[in-house]
Image 1 (cartoon, one colour):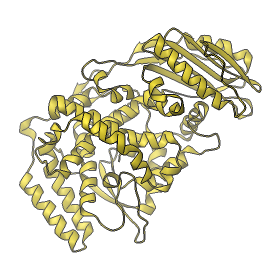
Image 2 (cartoon, helix red, strand yellow):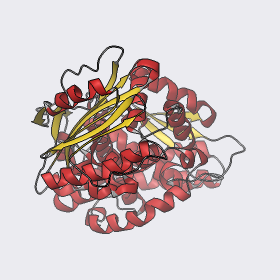
Image 3 (tube, helix red, strand yellow):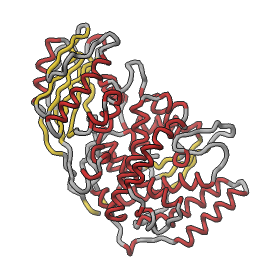
Image 4 (cartoon, helix red, strand yellow):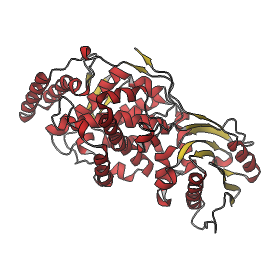
Length: 476
């Protein structure tokens, strides 16, 4: 698992792509198979450290033959103790963002309602990752980290064949994990994942879409490795539609087998953790179904711009439908109110937010959004959010579902409106919760005193909207 890809927000500024020609390809299937067999023998003798090293060397020989791109250098390898993982993750996260940025992100999630007000989301996230990660590739240091378990450990769940195993050393699971993480290394050496991820800012939806490409590719090659498909010809024939049906059933079962921290985590964290692997796999399968492995190379040049394009691959492939970038512009919430963050929710996270209120249907017509979160007097939170939709009917459907959700935010005694008008203002103590639809746009303003609400709604509707585009790819 690439933790950085999960932790960073997104707005693509530039890609530096290095596609490799057939002449550059350096794969040795026979040598790779021999190294796998050596690793199995070492594992049977109890020499698990040397077994993992053989597996790593094997997949450095095998993956290029499958994926049709070459490693540029040998991948560095390290072993991190499970007990040390939390400290490592905290260090990585602190290098990605300042404490003020993390606090702003957290307050934004609380203003929308993804997490409860008292939660320390960073701590929860680190606990989940510390429990669930079996290995990870760090594109910053170009190192694959394997996890050394304590001598006495409890059985663990959640995507066990991908993220980690249960008791003892399992040869097949270790090979699965190493194949997955080395695919990240292979992609990084050819497409510079660190640059792609760090070029993304204040667009969590776009970040999650990029993670879906990265994790989906690695899950696809992992499956090919399980099939001994070393030339990559079988896996590209597995229909994306069949995988979609399979994982629609398996998703809830994976959560049932997860660790304690993930089971206790807010739905937005659990769903966002699963999404890149499951939906990303379906997307990448669709790409290779249509265009072989070269289609993935092209996808790294022009990755999905939104989770909408991951959820609906035809909007990336057959009928490209880029989302709109919404810019709220300058917002004045009045004295004592400070803006703490801006970000994008997107279709995937909207589906989670409105899950109890026809979330998938309500989110399906999404075309773009931006929200701004504010902190005011007495640590009150304010939200200004403008979303734009494919049609007036889509906007109306979202507004209806969101009004139902908004009622739940107002407390147990709040009542839903008798009707669902295009404009509502509902008082809640000293604040007002407002929603208004104008055509295909919906503005939400919550948590501010009544005197600020109307001007913030008008500001939201003046938002600038432009079609999101990729920056021009630069080929090295």
